[in-house]
Length: 329
Image (tube, rainbow, N blue to C red; front, side, top):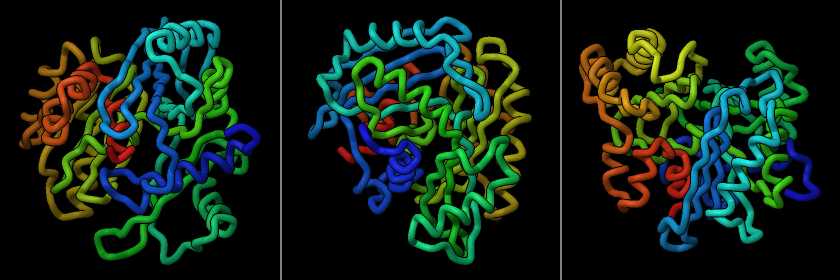
């Protein structure tokens, strides 16, 4: 927000955001712009949702040339800012901002997400933040004192306290914010794209989400209201050239960890971002995991959406739709 320290503002914004749908204590107090913009490694996109109905007013997507945005938790991300701004201008010509605030979705690999067990954590931000930074100082490849840290509490399997914590380097997040502000927009909420997508997961049982955007593969397991596992990995190839076995090798440790920790298997798997090769990856995962695997657009929650929102999910713009659902409309 104008005149607000980025670290403080983002900590407040993230703090109220929960990992799964309809967790009201995490969602009610955060800003909910109806205009959402995604900046990814291979595209920029925007959608405007009706404030009360949740209907899609307008949307646009523009591809980015390779190398314009190179997601990293450490190094500069926006390597060709003029090219990205040009794509954003074209998007905004179809989805005018009308001076309203923006929800900005950024690549998953910018932020590290952890699920930390705690015996107790102070409620006051100024007391909790140093503890979280101390806990994570050896787990991230950057100085924790120059980071944005955001967190939310959840109850673990044994009734213990867990803290879902997101940490990102402040100057990298500012690169994305400056893209929007340079075009007259106001980023009021900043969020990684898969965290925005999670409201599309089923609300019961354990769901595995395997989502790829560019070369970044994010693996999530959510069970009811709990985020049980979150892992983002940079793959060597994009989905058009990626071997399904490479994806299986990446997600097997996550599935095994969940089975060992919760003493149960996942109930289903949803996949997103694999484009024309969706069926190839769906079949490979179904054969190995022995559970039902379907595209995210065919999931139970997505099937309840109206046609325009469901179509966006099918176009791998699921994060834009997930944001609308976070709004609670």
